Image 1 (cartoon, rainbow, N blue to C red):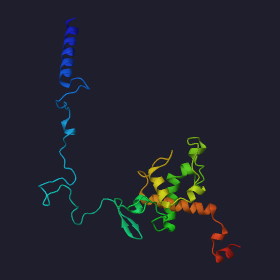
Image 2: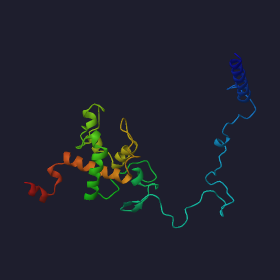
Image 3: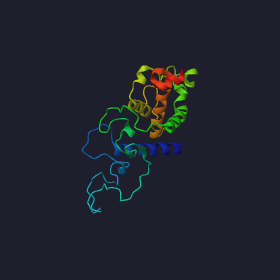
Image 4: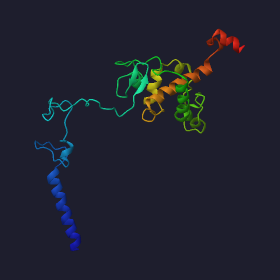
Length: 217
């Protein structure tokens, strides 16, 4: 009995102490709140552009030292190398400084890019959209996803390349964002291959040159 009474007394004392320290929630008070972890509010850090006497120019934010090598590899474009932190159509799918999507793929579309896009498409896109891009991938066949976009629909065919890049990057509807999974250059390669798929489905002999049409006949 004494043991139980002792536990009750100690519990009551701890409860009273906690109540006395923390007080009633929602009660107005002029006293500062009790902080269990004050370092969460007052961290030992410097704000961007905050004065900092330790540096010669007196500010906390500093430019990289001369000769610093960026951690990421740049993407080669017709306009030169582009790093992933730059406001460039390669990284955003938009015209620099705007929210307008770019019309065409900023990477040079060649056999190498198409082959790479084919490989990436089969890995990341085919499970849902199907290897033909017709929306009949394995996820639809087994009932995981009831509806998957057909990449040969007029709506998607007429989309700007930048808009498709934005959809791949951020996702849309039930489609998850592939940006964290698929590197930037791979996304553009996938778009190039998607355009090739669309052309193979929707192209006609009128798209061929006269010489090619004659050879076909």
